[in-house]
Image 1: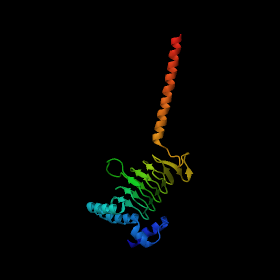
Image 2: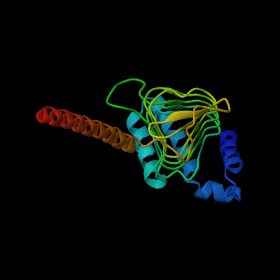
Image 3: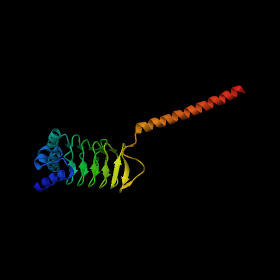
Image 4: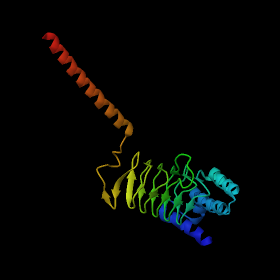
Amino acid sequence: MFNRMKEDIATIFENDPAARSWFEVVFTYSGLHALWAHRVAHWFYKKKRYTFARIISQVSRFMTGIEIHPGAVIGRRFFIDHGMGVVIGETCEIGDDVLLYHGVTLGGTGKEKGKRHPTIGNNVVISAGAKVTGSFTVGDNSRIGTNAVVLGEVPPNSTVVGIPGRVVKRDGVRVGRLEHDKLPDPVVDMFRQMQDQIDGLKAELVDIKSKNGGNNES
C-alpha cells in the first residue's frame, strides 16, 4: 500500500511542474486525495458494502470536487490535475498512466444496465472539459482535446477534437484537414444548409415568375 502511495506522489511530480515538495503534494492536491479515497471506497464496493462505499465517495466529492463512483476500476500512475468537476462513472475502466484535467466527464448514456461507461486505455490524456460518454474504448496513447465530446470508439494512437469528437491525427499522421483552431460548429453548419435551401427556393420562385410573365405577354 505504501509503495502505491509513493508511486502516486511520484506520478504527480512527473506530470506537474508546479509540484514543489512531498508535503505540498500530500496535503494540497485534491486529485491525489480523491484517488486515495476511491481506493478505500472501491475495496468496500468489492466486498458488496455498497452503501458505505458510496458514503466514502460522496464525502470525497464534497471535499475535493471530484466524483469517482466506487465501482470504477482505475489503474496505476493515475493523475487528475486540478480536478474540480471531474466525474467518473460506475462501470468506467481506466488503464495505467492516464492523465485527466478538470471538468472531464467519463459518463454513461441513458438508463441501460451493465457496462455503460467508457474504457480508457493506457497512457491516455483527456484535456479540460472533455466529455467521453458511452460504452466504448479509447485506445492506448490517445489524446482527447479540450471540450471535445466523444461519443464513439477511438483507435489507439489517435488525437480527437471537436463536437462531436473527430479523429484528426492517427499514428502521428494528420487525418483530413481539420485543425484545432477550425473546429466544426454544427449550429453554423445548420444555418448554412438552411441558407442554401432558401437561396434555391428563391431561384425557383424567380424562374416561375419569369415563365408566368412570358406566358402572359404571349
